[in-house]
Image (tube, rainbow over all chains, first blue to last red; front, side, top):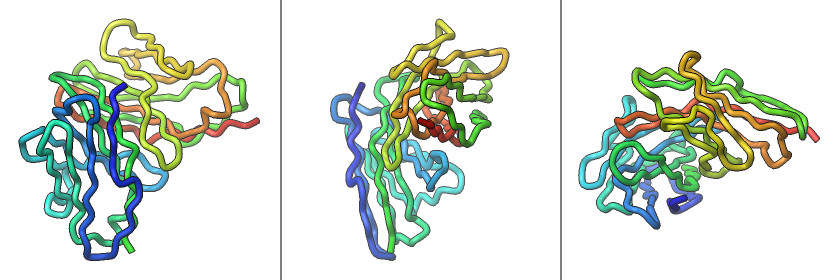
Length: 116
Length: 112
C-alpha cells in the first residue's frame, strides 16, 4: 500500500507555544488529507478534512484558529496546534487519499503531543 | 449522517479460538466499509475494505468480513486467533463526501 509519513512521532512542548505536525504522502498524490485526534483508549475523532489548494473543512466543535491546517501541495499537509494547553495533549493521526471518488485512506503513524 | 457502532468494547479469546468482532453502520447510501487494526501508540493498518461486489471480503492476516445490507453489519472474523492479533480494532464507514467515521473500537485480548 501507499505510504504516509507523519512527523514528529512524539513532541513535548510548553503551554502557550505552537507545535507543527507534518503529514506527507511519499509515493502518491494526496488530493485529500484528514486529521484525527484520539484520546487514550478512545476512537478517532475527525477534526478536519483538507483538499489540496483549498481551505480545510472543520468538524463541528473543532476550533479552526486553534488547529491550523495547511494543505499546500499534493504531498504535504500540516497541522499546527497554536497556543497549546495541557488539554491539547493527545494522539494526532493524519490520513491521505489520492485520486477522485472514493478510495481508501492511508494513515500516518501518529504524533503523540504532550503539553506541559 | 453516517455512523458506526461497535457494540463490544473489549473481547477476550483464547489463542486458536475463532473470533468475530461486530460492526453496525448507519448510512443513507451505499456504504464503503473498512476494518483497521491499531497496536498501542501506533497508527492504523488497513485489514480489509468493502466498496462493492462480493459481500465476503478477504483481508490480510487471515481476516475476513461480510457485508450484510439487510442487517447493516460488517462483522470481522478470523477462524483461529494468534497472540499477535491482540490490538484495537476499528470499523469505519466512508462515503462519497470523502470523510470517514470510525466506531469506538474493540480491544482484543488473546489468552495463551
